[in-house]
Length: 272
Image (spheres, rainbow, N blue to C red):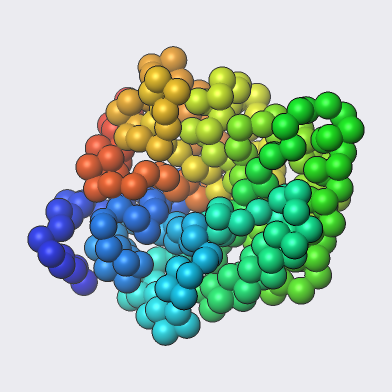
């Protein structure tokens, strides 16, 4: 089944089942809604990362009817989904009212996507407390832990929550993840652009990592084609991928970057 609205360019080959991990990409490859993106990408990839970045506004989140259609498309294309939870709100916000709203919204979104049986639910925990002094860190950790407990107490898909690596040292959430038995979204692009040793971090967190976000980095910028990945970083990326059997989402946002990234990965995978 193929679908090509508005003369969008299409991938020319299927990448389903060719790696030890599931290969996927985002629902923002084409300048269109969720359904057209899934119809275009479904025949070629194992999984789609549904980006639910925005939670505010009447049309920000997909409707229940869209969720039903996405579920049917998953069957048609032998496809699975993972979901990126909203980033315009944060359960780590300093304002208690904003925290309550964020917790309630995350729960609502998780219940909305429950029928899709997502492989993971990626959650950002931004550190917005300025100084990394021990006192500030502890306050941040306490409210993150408390709000995650509230979500886990009611969410049907609580076992799917994956905390994403951002710009700060992931040691800040080590105890929280272990205590609440959470999964991890290892964003290799974020780690590389901020200069972390990705092999060392993977070795530490591999047993909890359910999904990897992969994208190119160049001149302190990320979320670009893998073709922009410096040679010195290619070896550790391939080493990690060779050891991983979860989901790898090419977290990029255009057809050109997706197409070139898929070809780049395939070519270097064969050479390695």
